[in-house]
Amino acid sequence: MGNPRVAFFDFSSCEGCQLQVANMGEDLLAVLGAIDVVEFREVMSEKGEYDVAVIEGSITTSHDVERIKKIRAKAKVLIAYGSCATTGGVNGMKNNFELDDIRNYVYQKAAKYFETIPTRAVHQVVPVDYSVNGCPVYLPEFVKVLKCALAGIPYKVPDHAVCVECKLNENECMYDKGLTCLGPVTKAGCNSWCVNNNNVCYGCRGMVTNPAENGAKDILAKHDIPIEWVENKMNMYNKAREFDKKEEDHGKKC
Image 1 (tube, helix red, strand yellow):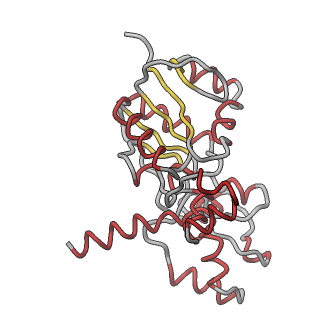
Image 2 (cartoon, rainbow, N blue to C red):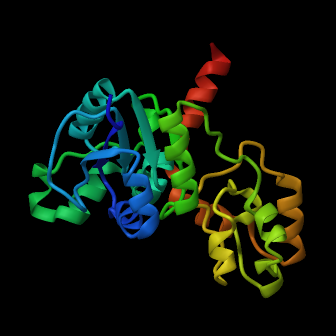
Image 3 (cartoon, rainbow, N blue to C red):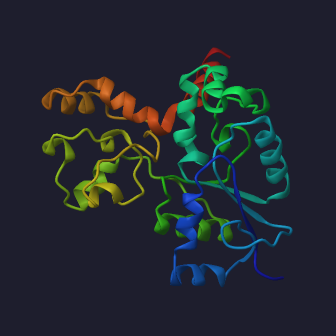
């Protein structure tokens, strides 16, 4: 019957997640032993039929919409990986402004040649079977999700805060260092990767479903940090989330 055929596609992104996968070293060889990669722009140029589509990047043009729908129609399984694909990522910051203003600012006299639409995550355009959050993806999680996809079993993105992983890793709280960290409201699953390396959490994995708002506010008040600082940082990766919120509100009205 042969190995499952896997294709990697990129939309609006820096392709950092593809590079992350390409740099897996020996772990990549183990993964490649279980699949046939038929498309991967960072590594190879071959093209062919595929069973599993792995998508990096957000949807930012009408052409992207058409293309992702065609990919979805061909793929038995679709995996969105990286913040751009799962939450809209940094490209979502465009949604803070009028599209014509952004287009004119970036392309100036040539703006009329570059069509654009509000940034959306992949799941806001087509159904997604598996998601791997992060900027870039955390490789142990990516491998786990890929194994689940190949085995046909579900994978649920952790929906508790990064702070839980920080405690398990015995990290000093960034707030105690006088730094604003989004760990209290960001989905875990990265093993508190950034904080382990003495950086703050920027919320690249998206917000937990039910953030402990009162607890987060208590932390901010304790350290005299305006909530606007947190909101502004969360905006960096999660602006496209507003489309999910609109769907939730529409459902409540219906």
